[in-house]
Image 1: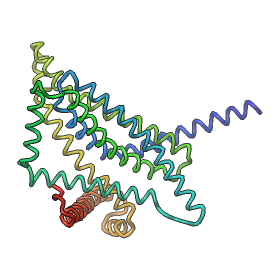
Image 2: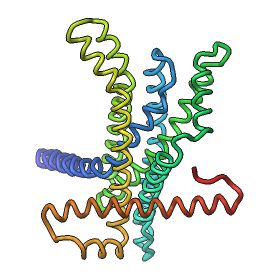
Image 3: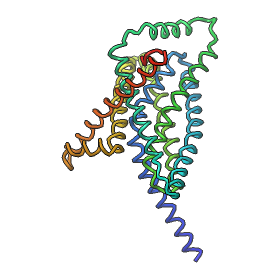
Image 4: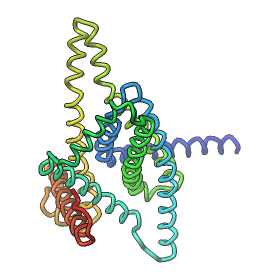
Length: 314
Protein backbone atom coordinates (compact mmCIF):
# COMPACT_ATOMS: atom_id res chain seq x y z
CA UNK A 1 0.00 0.00 0.00
CA UNK A 2 2.82 2.37 0.80
CA UNK A 3 4.36 1.75 -2.58
CA UNK A 4 1.04 2.29 -4.33
CA UNK A 5 0.49 5.50 -2.38
CA UNK A 6 3.95 6.73 -3.38
CA UNK A 7 3.27 6.07 -7.06
CA UNK A 8 -0.13 7.78 -6.76
CA UNK A 9 1.61 10.80 -5.20
CA UNK A 10 4.22 10.87 -7.96
CA UNK A 11 1.47 10.55 -10.58
CA UNK A 12 -0.53 13.37 -8.93
CA UNK A 13 2.56 15.60 -8.86
CA UNK A 14 3.35 14.79 -12.51
CA UNK A 15 -0.25 15.56 -13.51
CA UNK A 16 -0.21 18.79 -11.51
CA UNK A 17 3.04 19.91 -13.14
CA UNK A 18 1.71 18.99 -16.59
CA UNK A 19 -1.47 20.99 -15.98
CA UNK A 20 0.58 23.91 -14.65
CA UNK A 21 2.80 23.78 -17.75
CA UNK A 22 -0.27 24.02 -20.00
CA UNK A 23 -1.79 26.83 -17.91
CA UNK A 24 1.52 28.67 -17.85
CA UNK A 25 1.82 28.38 -21.63
CA UNK A 26 -1.68 29.81 -22.09
CA UNK A 27 -1.00 32.58 -19.59
CA UNK A 28 2.26 33.47 -21.32
CA UNK A 29 0.45 33.87 -24.64
CA UNK A 30 -2.23 36.05 -23.06
CA UNK A 31 0.26 38.28 -21.25
CA UNK A 32 2.60 38.72 -24.22
CA UNK A 33 1.06 42.10 -24.99
CA UNK A 34 1.90 43.43 -21.58
CA UNK A 35 5.44 42.09 -21.81
CA UNK A 36 6.13 43.76 -25.16
CA UNK A 37 5.30 47.12 -23.66
CA UNK A 38 7.04 46.17 -20.41
CA UNK A 39 10.31 45.65 -22.30
CA UNK A 40 10.14 48.98 -24.07
CA UNK A 41 9.06 50.91 -20.96
CA UNK A 42 11.71 49.47 -18.68
CA UNK A 43 14.49 49.85 -21.24
CA UNK A 44 13.51 53.51 -21.59
CA UNK A 45 13.37 53.91 -17.80
CA UNK A 46 17.05 53.00 -17.35
CA UNK A 47 18.36 55.00 -20.28
CA UNK A 48 20.23 58.09 -19.14
CA UNK A 49 22.20 56.45 -16.34
CA UNK A 50 25.93 55.97 -16.83
CA UNK A 51 27.01 52.81 -18.67
CA UNK A 52 28.71 51.41 -15.57
CA UNK A 53 25.49 51.72 -13.55
CA UNK A 54 23.00 50.36 -16.13
CA UNK A 55 23.09 46.73 -14.99
CA UNK A 56 23.03 47.56 -11.24
CA UNK A 57 20.02 49.79 -11.87
CA UNK A 58 18.28 47.01 -13.82
CA UNK A 59 19.04 44.57 -11.00
CA UNK A 60 17.58 47.01 -8.46
CA UNK A 61 14.40 47.34 -10.55
CA UNK A 62 14.21 43.55 -11.01
CA UNK A 63 14.36 43.07 -7.23
CA UNK A 64 11.61 45.66 -6.86
CA UNK A 65 9.63 43.77 -9.48
CA UNK A 66 9.90 40.56 -7.46
CA UNK A 67 8.66 42.44 -4.38
CA UNK A 68 5.74 43.75 -6.45
CA UNK A 69 4.82 40.22 -7.48
CA UNK A 70 5.26 38.94 -3.92
CA UNK A 71 2.47 41.38 -3.01
CA UNK A 72 0.32 40.83 -6.09
CA UNK A 73 0.31 37.01 -6.21
CA UNK A 74 -1.15 36.53 -2.69
CA UNK A 75 -3.62 39.34 -3.37
CA UNK A 76 -4.73 37.62 -6.59
CA UNK A 77 -5.11 34.28 -4.80
CA UNK A 78 -7.13 35.96 -2.04
CA UNK A 79 -9.44 37.49 -4.64
CA UNK A 80 -9.88 34.10 -6.32
CA UNK A 81 -10.66 32.46 -2.96
CA UNK A 82 -13.12 35.25 -2.11
CA UNK A 83 -14.98 34.75 -5.39
CA UNK A 84 -15.25 30.99 -4.78
CA UNK A 85 -16.43 31.63 -1.20
CA UNK A 86 -19.10 34.08 -2.36
CA UNK A 87 -20.26 31.72 -5.11
CA UNK A 88 -20.62 28.94 -2.54
CA UNK A 89 -23.09 31.19 -0.71
CA UNK A 90 -25.12 31.96 -3.79
CA UNK A 91 -23.50 35.34 -4.46
CA UNK A 92 -22.18 35.31 -8.02
CA UNK A 93 -19.94 38.35 -8.39
CA UNK A 94 -17.50 38.00 -11.33
CA UNK A 95 -14.58 39.70 -9.55
CA UNK A 96 -11.85 38.17 -11.72
CA UNK A 97 -13.65 38.92 -15.00
CA UNK A 98 -14.30 42.49 -13.81
CA UNK A 99 -10.62 42.95 -12.94
CA UNK A 100 -9.66 41.49 -16.32
CA UNK A 101 -11.94 43.96 -18.09
CA UNK A 102 -10.50 46.85 -16.06
CA UNK A 103 -6.98 45.67 -16.85
CA UNK A 104 -7.80 45.18 -20.53
CA UNK A 105 -9.43 48.61 -20.76
CA UNK A 106 -6.38 50.14 -19.09
CA UNK A 107 -4.13 48.45 -21.65
CA UNK A 108 -6.24 49.88 -24.47
CA UNK A 109 -6.19 53.32 -22.81
CA UNK A 110 -2.39 53.22 -22.57
CA UNK A 111 -2.15 52.20 -26.22
CA UNK A 112 -4.37 55.05 -27.44
CA UNK A 113 -2.58 57.52 -25.20
CA UNK A 114 0.75 56.47 -26.73
CA UNK A 115 -0.67 56.95 -30.23
CA UNK A 116 -2.04 60.40 -29.33
CA UNK A 117 1.32 61.43 -27.88
CA UNK A 118 3.16 60.11 -30.93
CA UNK A 119 1.00 61.73 -33.60
CA UNK A 120 -0.12 64.94 -31.90
CA UNK A 121 2.53 65.73 -29.28
CA UNK A 122 5.82 64.86 -30.96
CA UNK A 123 7.32 68.21 -30.06
CA UNK A 124 5.80 68.60 -26.61
CA UNK A 125 7.88 71.38 -25.01
CA UNK A 126 7.47 70.11 -21.44
CA UNK A 127 8.78 66.67 -22.35
CA UNK A 128 11.69 68.15 -24.25
CA UNK A 129 12.55 70.37 -21.28
CA UNK A 130 12.41 67.36 -18.93
CA UNK A 131 14.65 65.38 -21.25
CA UNK A 132 17.12 68.25 -21.50
CA UNK A 133 17.16 68.63 -17.72
CA UNK A 134 17.96 64.92 -17.33
CA UNK A 135 20.83 65.17 -19.81
CA UNK A 136 22.23 68.23 -18.05
CA UNK A 137 21.96 66.48 -14.70
CA UNK A 138 24.07 63.60 -15.97
CA UNK A 139 26.98 65.90 -16.80
CA UNK A 140 26.55 68.26 -13.83
CA UNK A 141 28.96 67.20 -11.08
CA UNK A 142 26.96 69.14 -8.47
CA UNK A 143 23.92 66.92 -8.98
CA UNK A 144 23.38 64.08 -6.49
CA UNK A 145 23.73 61.11 -8.87
CA UNK A 146 22.74 58.63 -6.16
CA UNK A 147 19.43 60.47 -5.58
CA UNK A 148 18.85 60.70 -9.34
CA UNK A 149 19.45 56.96 -9.72
CA UNK A 150 17.12 56.14 -6.82
CA UNK A 151 14.45 58.30 -8.42
CA UNK A 152 14.81 56.38 -11.70
CA UNK A 153 14.63 53.04 -9.90
CA UNK A 154 11.54 54.10 -7.91
CA UNK A 155 9.82 55.28 -11.10
CA UNK A 156 10.59 52.05 -12.91
CA UNK A 157 9.32 49.96 -9.97
CA UNK A 158 6.06 51.94 -9.91
CA UNK A 159 5.64 51.30 -13.65
CA UNK A 160 6.44 47.63 -13.11
CA UNK A 161 3.77 47.37 -10.39
CA UNK A 162 1.05 48.41 -12.84
CA UNK A 163 2.30 46.10 -15.58
CA UNK A 164 2.82 43.22 -13.13
CA UNK A 165 -0.72 43.68 -11.84
CA UNK A 166 -1.99 43.38 -15.42
CA UNK A 167 0.02 40.19 -15.96
CA UNK A 168 -1.19 38.63 -12.68
CA UNK A 169 -4.84 39.53 -13.34
CA UNK A 170 -4.70 38.11 -16.87
CA UNK A 171 -3.08 34.92 -15.58
CA UNK A 172 -5.63 34.64 -12.77
CA UNK A 173 -8.44 34.85 -15.29
CA UNK A 174 -6.96 31.90 -17.18
CA UNK A 175 -6.42 29.69 -14.11
CA UNK A 176 -9.63 30.71 -12.29
CA UNK A 177 -11.22 27.29 -12.84
CA UNK A 178 -8.10 25.36 -11.79
CA UNK A 179 -7.43 23.98 -8.32
CA UNK A 180 -5.89 26.24 -5.69
CA UNK A 181 -2.56 24.39 -5.92
CA UNK A 182 -2.43 24.83 -9.68
CA UNK A 183 -3.26 28.52 -9.31
CA UNK A 184 -0.45 29.02 -6.79
CA UNK A 185 2.21 27.23 -8.85
CA UNK A 186 1.14 28.83 -12.15
CA UNK A 187 1.05 32.38 -10.73
CA UNK A 188 4.45 31.94 -9.08
CA UNK A 189 5.91 30.40 -12.26
CA UNK A 190 4.59 33.26 -14.40
CA UNK A 191 5.76 35.90 -11.90
CA UNK A 192 9.32 34.55 -11.69
CA UNK A 193 9.64 33.65 -15.39
CA UNK A 194 8.34 37.03 -16.57
CA UNK A 195 10.69 38.91 -14.23
CA UNK A 196 13.73 36.93 -15.41
CA UNK A 197 12.68 37.17 -19.06
CA UNK A 198 11.83 40.88 -19.07
CA UNK A 199 14.78 42.17 -17.08
CA UNK A 200 17.23 39.76 -18.71
CA UNK A 201 16.19 41.13 -22.09
CA UNK A 202 16.20 44.71 -20.82
CA UNK A 203 19.78 44.17 -19.66
CA UNK A 204 20.70 42.83 -23.06
CA UNK A 205 18.96 45.67 -24.89
CA UNK A 206 20.61 48.49 -22.97
CA UNK A 207 24.02 46.84 -23.46
CA UNK A 208 23.70 46.31 -27.22
CA UNK A 209 25.39 49.62 -28.00
CA UNK A 210 28.22 48.87 -25.53
CA UNK A 211 28.76 45.47 -27.14
CA UNK A 212 28.70 47.10 -30.57
CA UNK A 213 31.23 49.71 -29.49
CA UNK A 214 33.53 47.01 -28.08
CA UNK A 215 33.31 44.95 -31.27
CA UNK A 216 33.85 48.00 -33.49
CA UNK A 217 37.31 48.44 -31.94
CA UNK A 218 38.36 44.90 -32.88
CA UNK A 219 38.67 45.56 -36.58
CA UNK A 220 37.66 43.36 -39.50
CA UNK A 221 34.32 41.54 -39.46
CA UNK A 222 33.89 42.25 -35.74
CA UNK A 223 34.04 45.98 -36.42
CA UNK A 224 31.36 45.69 -39.10
CA UNK A 225 29.12 43.72 -36.73
CA UNK A 226 29.81 46.21 -33.95
CA UNK A 227 28.83 49.20 -36.07
CA UNK A 228 25.69 47.32 -37.11
CA UNK A 229 24.76 46.72 -33.47
CA UNK A 230 25.31 50.37 -32.55
CA UNK A 231 23.13 51.45 -35.48
CA UNK A 232 20.43 48.87 -34.72
CA UNK A 233 20.01 49.66 -31.00
CA UNK A 234 17.69 52.68 -31.45
CA UNK A 235 15.79 50.86 -34.22
CA UNK A 236 15.23 47.90 -31.89
CA UNK A 237 13.78 50.20 -29.25
CA UNK A 238 11.36 51.69 -31.76
CA UNK A 239 10.32 48.24 -33.00
CA UNK A 240 9.73 47.08 -29.42
CA UNK A 241 7.61 50.13 -28.76
CA UNK A 242 5.48 49.58 -31.90
CA UNK A 243 5.04 45.85 -31.25
CA UNK A 244 4.25 46.53 -27.60
CA UNK A 245 1.58 49.08 -28.51
CA UNK A 246 0.02 46.76 -31.09
CA UNK A 247 0.00 43.89 -28.59
CA UNK A 248 -1.68 46.10 -25.98
CA UNK A 249 -4.65 46.60 -28.33
CA UNK A 250 -4.77 42.91 -29.29
CA UNK A 251 -4.66 41.68 -25.70
CA UNK A 252 -6.86 44.42 -24.20
CA UNK A 253 -9.37 44.29 -27.04
CA UNK A 254 -9.35 40.48 -26.93
CA UNK A 255 -10.30 40.56 -23.24
CA UNK A 256 -13.27 42.80 -24.01
CA UNK A 257 -14.35 40.71 -27.01
CA UNK A 258 -14.28 37.43 -25.08
CA UNK A 259 -15.77 38.68 -21.81
CA UNK A 260 -18.52 41.05 -22.91
CA UNK A 261 -21.30 38.83 -24.34
CA UNK A 262 -22.82 41.49 -26.61
CA UNK A 263 -19.45 42.26 -28.22
CA UNK A 264 -18.54 38.56 -28.44
CA UNK A 265 -21.78 37.65 -30.24
CA UNK A 266 -21.52 40.63 -32.59
CA UNK A 267 -17.96 39.67 -33.59
CA UNK A 268 -18.81 35.96 -33.89
CA UNK A 269 -21.71 36.77 -36.23
CA UNK A 270 -19.35 38.57 -38.63
CA UNK A 271 -16.59 35.94 -38.77
CA UNK A 272 -16.22 32.46 -40.31
CA UNK A 273 -16.67 29.66 -37.76
CA UNK A 274 -13.18 28.21 -38.26
CA UNK A 275 -9.93 28.36 -40.21
CA UNK A 276 -7.54 31.22 -40.92
CA UNK A 277 -10.42 33.57 -41.58
CA UNK A 278 -11.64 33.11 -38.04
CA UNK A 279 -8.17 33.60 -36.50
CA UNK A 280 -7.33 36.69 -38.57
CA UNK A 281 -10.82 38.09 -38.10
CA UNK A 282 -10.61 37.67 -34.32
CA UNK A 283 -7.24 39.43 -34.25
CA UNK A 284 -8.56 42.34 -36.34
CA UNK A 285 -11.71 42.54 -34.24
CA UNK A 286 -9.62 42.62 -31.04
CA UNK A 287 -7.46 45.37 -32.54
CA UNK A 288 -10.46 47.50 -33.58
CA UNK A 289 -12.30 46.95 -30.30
CA UNK A 290 -9.10 47.74 -28.40
CA UNK A 291 -8.68 51.07 -30.18
CA UNK A 292 -12.36 51.97 -29.62
CA UNK A 293 -12.27 51.05 -25.92
CA UNK A 294 -8.99 52.91 -25.44
CA UNK A 295 -10.37 56.01 -27.13
CA UNK A 296 -13.52 55.91 -24.99
CA UNK A 297 -11.53 55.55 -21.76
CA UNK A 298 -9.17 58.34 -22.81
CA UNK A 299 -12.17 60.56 -23.55
CA UNK A 300 -13.68 59.85 -20.12
CA UNK A 301 -10.36 60.45 -18.35
CA UNK A 302 -9.82 63.73 -20.23
CA UNK A 303 -13.38 64.88 -19.44
CA UNK A 304 -13.03 64.06 -15.73
CA UNK A 305 -9.72 65.92 -15.55
CA UNK A 306 -11.22 68.97 -17.21
CA UNK A 307 -14.29 68.93 -14.97
CA UNK A 308 -12.14 68.79 -11.85
CA UNK A 309 -9.73 71.45 -13.08
CA UNK A 310 -6.83 69.15 -13.91
CA UNK A 311 -4.67 69.06 -16.99
CA UNK A 312 -5.67 67.12 -20.05
CA UNK A 313 -4.61 63.49 -20.38
CA UNK A 314 -1.75 64.50 -22.56
